Length: 429
Image (cartoon, rainbow, N blue to C red; front, side):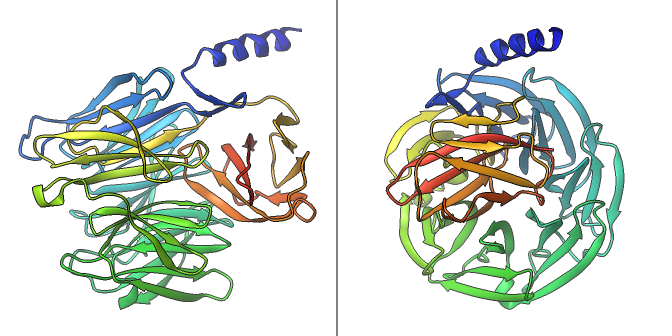
């Protein structure tokens, strides 16, 4: 009786949280905006804010006394921030700082089990992957076999894949592989000159896709696809200068391209939009700082800046139409979407899709009230990143293998050919 009363009270509290609700389902809790400040002002520190998509209000909640932000990462109700020489953790419900640790050269983060895995760059000259306890940020060890500066990471099939672009002088790229359980080194794979600038990693159709950022002055860019089974790599080169890759949604890759936001079709490897979002003003030294895609609600959040005097945030739909704006500081180079809705049921149903068991450990059984002969599915992390995707047929795909996911809260979205999107939240234990 006490437990049921506790769940009822908790459910009432959840209803009062700021959230974006579609079809009775919580899909977006808040957008986190981390700004590095004016590069010319040593006293303009990293600032943190949360944007509520319903009230359109922005809450400023944190400051890190350093001059640049590298990345933000969300795991359950904790926000992790890497900023020049430190890692800081915040509670996303109270916005209170809960832990911090000094580390030179911090870059990107990934949570695997109880580990916070962090990639490292200059000024560090060794130990380019370091591991911390995700709760306390206690240092647990380094992976010394990573040969050079590391960048983006992705978790797939019990392994952590790490982009190893090296320093700014490097002309080759590498892909390192770690054990997702303890972070131990497995191997490092040479990608050659086609892998130069390897940076942002994604999992798509059972393969690891890397966006290789073009060197300064280059007029071409390359996307590489690594097959973990055959250990082979395919490279796809485009006549565009390619920057950050920030999302895959329904077989479309979204990247910064010639100072605009472009889209690459991952089926036929064509550029479907060279400028879905236009160049914000590179001729006046105004550039995109970061962008994230909310595939559940069909929105792109993007920040622009000149890095010394201004910063703006814009909201677009997936057709590139401007839908609104949000507050963003100067050099807002790190954004994250906070999706959360805890569930205590063994089965959860939203609209026409149900999943069980919930929480799930290895297999997630799917029930649809409509037939879907052909479609696709995405599994999103709590920060909105697509961690798993593939083709979907309701007559064939009665279950999905989620054993490779680490413990946490995820969103499953099933997309039909007629444009119907079915969504639900599940917990991986």
